[in-house]
Length: 453
Image 1: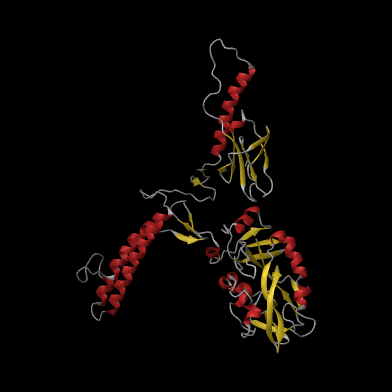
Image 2 (image 1 turned 60 degrees about the vertical axis):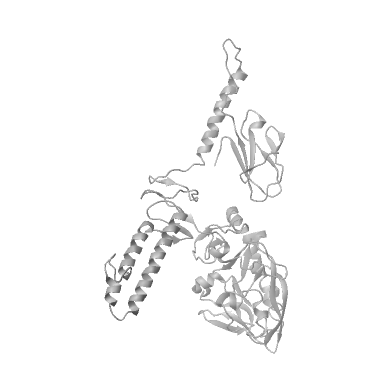
């Protein structure tokens, strides 16, 4: 968006020098804001370049704005000498005020093409309580009406329960007309249902989807919380683009995950990378991971590879050919798609097998790994339950993607899981979708999980 009297920049965490591209009458009229907070101690390096008092953090919005006073700077007097400088200053002040007013209009809500008020997808705050039937409703009022509806519903449930337990008069308790007492101060289920319906009338058409309250009667929307817990419980499955945008990375790093939901995906290099969890590894590791992050799983196998050249699980997952070199191509592809945003953190992985069972493990640096059975199925299936720590590690709960959409685990092509099953077999998801195990020398699909931040 172009402005006449503003310049906007995005901080990169290192730059503190910014250019002024618009004219102004004097330096006192220039204000600098970092994330809407004024920096009162800027330094003018030149007339067209300033330096902030602090280095704006990465992703911060830096705004340079001109604020021309409305009081006239020039006062013409009779018989005064009018030169071009005085006339220019007077006209420039007027033009600057008009430009600043025009810039201000760019940030106001206007009429849409459908004869409505268009908020351009932004939440509307400080909405008052509705008075007339056509007034917009705020979340507080909606919840108040909803609570009243739930109270009425609860009373209807009580009335229905009493009706069912009565040996006589059951029909009266269930069907007596509204406001007609069955016994003193006691009413039928029909009565309370009608009251609930009347209370609900003011919130008819309100429903929740896409983590937002929507109304059929007015344009206002009120968002539910943006955080990992809320977003881990909603499957959406929308296409997010051919790359992760700066805004999307910011939503991940600050932990609100705005407009990102389970099942949403980016298509990069012909691969669909689908969101499987938010903050799945948060606080995991012998060195805790404290960065907000999104865990991704590709829709299909990236390629096929053996776990080992021979049918053995000796040395566990860490000493397998898959871990040592089989994931290299996946790491190259993923790092090419997401670069330095791929999260390197600590994972507990199996490094020993005794008598056909996992028997040892340790913490390792990790970027891209095969999933385990718990991440896909939600429980151990083929991997030994004894010493389960060594197969499971810290990844001990099912990924929300597979909990909300179990069918996405089934891709009609077998892929390896990292769990040791026996002295010769590792776990895998069969091409038909069932939980399976195969000899280590089989070439099955590589469908790893990884996280970005």
